[in-house]
Each structure stands twice: as C-alpha cells, then as structure tokens.
Image 1 (cartoon, rainbow, N blue to C red):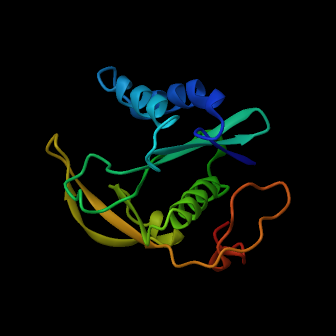
Image 2 (image 1 turned 30 degrees about the vertical axis):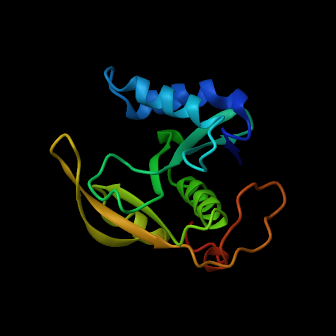
Length: 175
C-alpha cells in the first residue's frame, strides 16, 4: 500500500478530484473538490492536504485534512474529511492507514488535535477519536464532532509502507 500526497505529487490531482467527486459530491458541489484540490497544490498555507491510498496502480481510498468541514465549530482545526475506502477493499483497516498518515502530518505541522465530524458511532473511536460535541452544518443537519490527541510517538516506518504508525497501533489490534 502506498499513500500519495496530492500536494507532493501534483500529477495525482485529477485522479483525486475524480475520486472525491464520485464519492462525496453532488452535481451542485463537484466544483468544491476541484477548486480545493487544485488550489492546494500551490498554496502557502499548510492546509488543505489530500491523500490517495493505492495498492500498486489500483486506487483503494482517499481522505483529506482541511481547515473546516462545513461545520459550526470553526474554532477547531484541522479536520479529517472525506475518508472513503472502496467497498471491495473494506475490512482490512485501510481507513486506519489514511487516518494515521493524516495524524502524522497534522502532528508534524504542530497541531495538538485532529477533528472530524460524522454520523457514525463506533468506528472512529477504535482509532483514538473521542466524542467532543455536537456540531451544525449550514444546510440544517448536525453531526457528531470527534477529537484525537496527536501527542503520539511515531516509530520507524515498515519497509514498503509510506505512513508512520504510532506506537499505540504497533500490536496490530486494529486489524
């Protein structure tokens, strides 16, 4: 498995745009992903960041790290967003690989926490996220807000793997 940073490999931008549009956008919101991904390539800001997970040439999943996930708690950042693993690849903890990469990047950027908003209960808690509060979206819906502390000591990367793994996950307990 390889995690591709779209910012570090701009040639992956069009693939990332198509992936996130396919899985997260409506016809009306497709431009949000295109504009965000294209403009992150040369931004002076450390956010946003977009990542793709590949198994050889096959695209397995993706996720982003953004300054706000369209939620009322604009005092909190960065946010893990748009995590998606293709259905045929689920059940192998590939989402955890993307989460750990984003946790590592957020910690390296000096952020003490990583946040996410979701309606899921039980999934993100397995990966160090704790429920923080309820948040509200501009379109009238609400979501659970989770936070993960980034005070982790990262260990050496295994050969052939591009994401650092926190010591807390070395045992393989997450699958």
